[in-house]
Length: 391
Figure 1 (cartoon, helix red, strand yellow):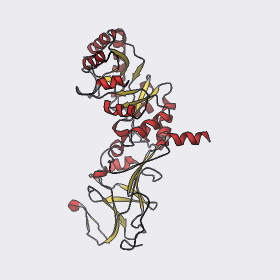
Figure 2 (cartoon, one colour):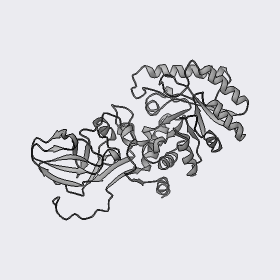
Figure 3 (cartoon, one colour):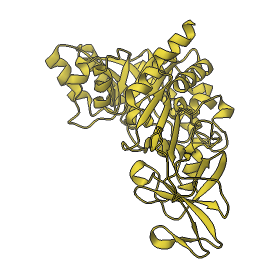
């Protein structure tokens, strides 16, 4: 069928991010088996890393996650509004954060120290103690109190706990380079964390939960597991390591990004492609148009991003535009308008990390930036998994 012929309408959507909830459950289970007896907190922040907040949360819990983690209180409140009763931790705040709403909803609060007076005030007004996890900056340089301020923060927290305003449930930190297992900084961070735990114990603060490991540390540093690990990208089936695939880690990618070919046309040698004409073909060829662009989360900077059409890999050429990008199909092709296109995931053999490489970034950014214009289609939700298990 030529690009100018009659095209039959397709029932498959123009674009979709297909989310396999069973893959998320599998990944949580796989990581949980590896880190046991440590508990697993599944990070479902940023709309479940682009997979859908509620979808990710329910699938993670079905896979055995004991906790769910969010950056913002507002995200945790959405989980409570959806009827999720699992333990929740939210850790990124401003003075305007809804501390009282979090306390009422039984959401644990991370604290770098400055939040403690605000949390204690909200707890006092509610006559309900806040559940707090104290956060220490052991070297990442972001959230968390400094090593120098740690004794003061622990002392203040202990006083609030003695007053019945807070309950110190955990102490945690975050690792900077665990995705590079040979870096000595991880050893230094863990040593600082252990020292901080001793300082807290000397002040009478001995919480049930000590947690430091992110996905790469969970998979490569058993000495970082402590009582709980906080895993994000791994539960979505993405490798945190540059030199190891998800498959080698036993993880299953949970998102497949796909669309349909929107145009096919032959062009002569020298044809320029897309804004800026940054690419020109050096011989007569055929171009295919893919109706996904940077408004949908495909990075504008990407060069040579892979796609799969009719079982064959092709690569993007020219700049990604707001709504579309172009692939070079070669001089002779069987690709037609309406053919299914997979950018990554599913059975394509293409990992999100390959688009990360094409865009000079990482797989984390690729999956989390897929825009709202791309519908999420959830397959194998926990209820369906349960039904299959009962058969």
